Length: 222
Image 1 (spheres, helix red, strand yellow):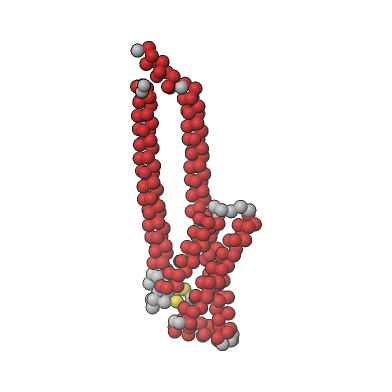
Image 2 (image 1 turned 30 degrees about the horizontal axis):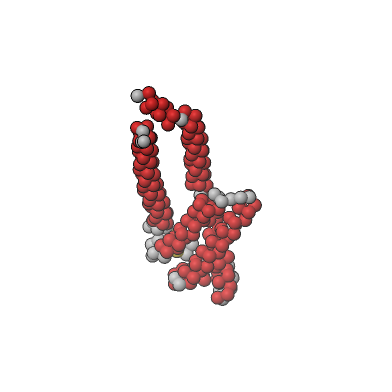
């Protein structure tokens, strides 16, 4: 015999399940559009950095925005800066275990990125006639060799040191992004733990009341 209380309990269970599924779907879509918004904002920010580096009459080293030689260095330079920024924000800092090991990984990342960008800078300048002529003139002015071997290692050392300053700056800047992010994650975890504790307490109280016993008792009276 199927009692009214059993049907009511089953209906409420299905209703709660439907509401929960709808909430999960809404929450998933909300996170999806929120992530898209974050990607768009960050992309616009990096595009703004590149645009700022290419304003008229802007010179950096042997490159200039007036003749367009600064465009590509500003693009791949921003890519390396973003690599440092997001590697620390999403990989290194959140997964840190011990401070010395975290510091070692940061140092290796910054050094490798600085050297890699320095190599690209060297070949870009060698392929740009005006920049190459300016570099040779600078070396001759201080009586330094201009042979290919010295030019290669000298350029890489010089450019890597310049890139190192920028990479350290972007590494420090990443904490302005990652620290609020970590604080929000910790707050969310705390709220989830509190919600789970509240649900567990409610389930315990419901188990003490035993609704089936109450409904069956009422039906037996009628």
